[in-house]
Amino acid sequence: MLDIFAEIRDDLKIVEEELVSVVQAPDSFITETATHLINAGGKRLRPAFSLLGAKFYHYDIKKVLALAVALELIHMASLVHDDVVDSAVTRRGIPTVKSMWGNRISTHLGDYIFGKSLILISTYDNPIIPRVLSDTSVKMCEGEIQQISTVLDASQSIKDYFYRINRKTALLIAASCQLGAVACGAPVSVHGPLRRYGHNIGMAFQITDDVLDLVADQQQLGKPIGSDLHQGIITLPVIHALERCSFKERLREIVFKEVKTEQEVQEAVELIVSCGGVEYANKVALKYIQKAKEELSLLPDIPARDTLFTIADFISIRKF
Amino acid sequence: MLDIFAEIRDDLKIVEEELVSVVQAPDSFITETATHLINAGGKRLRPAFSLLGAKFYHYDIKKVLALAVALELIHMASLVHDDVVDSAVTRRGIPTVKSMWGNRISTHLGDYIFGKSLILISTYDNPIIPRVLSDTSVKMCEGEIQQISTVLDASQSIKDYFYRINRKTALLIAASCQLGAVACGAPVSVHGPLRRYGHNIGMAFQITDDVLDLVADQQQLGKPIGSDLHQGIITLPVIHALERCSFKERLREIVFKEVKTEQEVQEAVELIVSCGGVEYANKVALKYIQKAKEELSLLPDIPARDTLFTIADFISIRKF
Image (cartoon, rainbow over all chains, first blue to last red; front, side, top):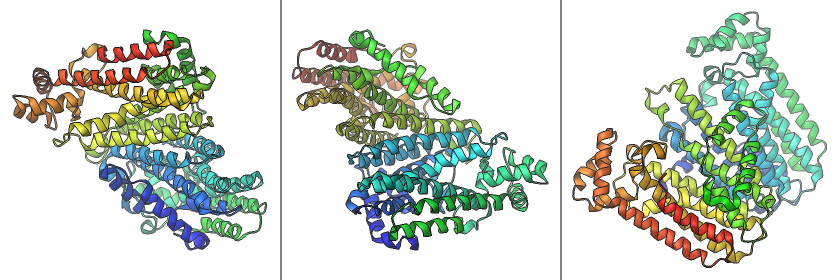
């Protein structure tokens, strides 16, 4: 858990306990695999955003707990299903469920975890919560499927990239910020700014993720560098570099090769960096951070607003 | 569509149209694969049960349509995820592109279809509907995971089998019957009998399915005979035969072999039939049918009740 979450640290511990408790199953095998997944860690960004969103009205952890846990479960379920498809062997430096138990278990375990989130969501009377989250979960799939169908696709544009990362990442973070407030009964006037803050943060977060996949310290990141390139996933720095690079023919040759050697990926990364692809992507991420901060000015001046401001800054400078 | 659905045939057509319309996506690839899936057919049993359940109050197709479509989508999503295979882990650690794409599409398309069902469910104000369906979807996963983890497991009991088929099949059929009535605002007095009717029908349906997997006409069934045995899934006739068969050593030898030849499966089927495994399972199915019919006597005497009665009889005599 990050230090910037000091204000909600105690309640994030409650979320953590509830996460473990909620995935207990009659079948000990399910409990074991699901608990493995939770103990593998994660930044718990989505629960944190929902708690911070909830601070903008009569904050009550009892009202927002089920939502906070549900958001992390939705996120975890999508990661488990991601692992089925991209045959990743480690995530956050820890073996994935798929590599330990196989594709079929991953598929059903993801469904199980997602189903548990639905039970939590169904405890809310406010219809906005299930409506936003069901819409979000459908769009998340659209993003994932678009990612699959554009692998090694040389014709994809920056617009396609934004469509994808909005669905893959930004929508659930936007929902987290908004629905935390909704769960505590906050007036509509705070929903919009919180949701748009989350959207912009989410976009910046994913762009930074895609940059780190190219230039992070491998040990800090907990997964191999260049894994997007290996998988044929074309991210913002790459799209930019393919347009601008002086050696664009060579870059194109590597990027759209079905199977790449480590050396080729390294060469591609160097070309992308040298022609400003990473710098450009960082600039775009900063613009989203800026927009996120502007939304905060529409919200009441409370400590949670400062925290959201600090998180915005953290997103753009994080190294893992 | 079966003839016994005459009473609801027109409304089942509306369900069919809505099924196609609801899976349209901005991405033409998703629309294409999802439509393919819907056009591949199916008995539409769950929508039919929900419409028939709805007949027990102020029937209105507009009120029950979203539920009927959602139920079929949940069922379809679970079938798609069933198709996910483990080729990725077995082929020298490197999955073929073809097998990987199969898994990718199955996983995300299943999630997409399931997500669409959630959007439909979120249109209902009555909290019973999302609560029953989220609970059901979690338990369905428990059943699927138990099935995977008991493959070739010689220690499983009849109790394990009932646990599994209740979760895999009966719960969603029970929910279909009950929630149809709930969607039309029916009083609690009809929920219980409809739910229990559905439970018993669902158990009988799955037992019959497992029997047909051994003894059906392959062409009528539309899939190879003995596929459960091939996959190491131990069903009721097999459990019974393993206890009672005079050649139980030979039967055990075949059943728990990891890879079986066609001839071995054929031999196992003959042993199971000859020692009364199929006869026993058919008897158990008939008991469930009987219990289902008893529940109907607690319901008002309307044409839909006769239809449910006829369906009960059909389940036990069906050949595919």
